Image (cartoon, rainbow, N blue to C red; front, top):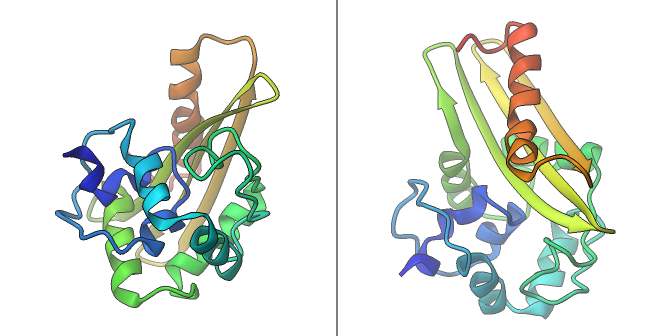
Length: 184
């Protein structure tokens, strides 16, 4: 059953959702996306507990209006790219109110590219606000000598949806290649 996989975190759900869940993890490997999984997991956590964890984690404006099963997609939750980067730094540095074990599992789930020279940990997100598609690609790159954080938020009313989805990651990948931070 797809909703038992917490690894859907890399998709359209805030990263803290896994961290606040008590649902057992079948595997830290990323599973195929399941449309029903994220809302079901959020419902299991519940509005009160979700709001509490959003505030403890200082995640964006911590607004769950719009429904426990949609607040991060089309509800009141808002977060800036700067806040995303701050959240990623706190994940990397274990500075969130979650166990080391939970953060370690999250970090494994977030691995999207790994070579001998670097590891990219990232997540994507999609939502809609004011009749616009909003796409996120956030993460960080660990090299042998440094850590680099990124947050890309794109918005569009007019471009073809498939191109929009791909643009979230392609823009970041082009910049990272230009900066010689990734070489693939």
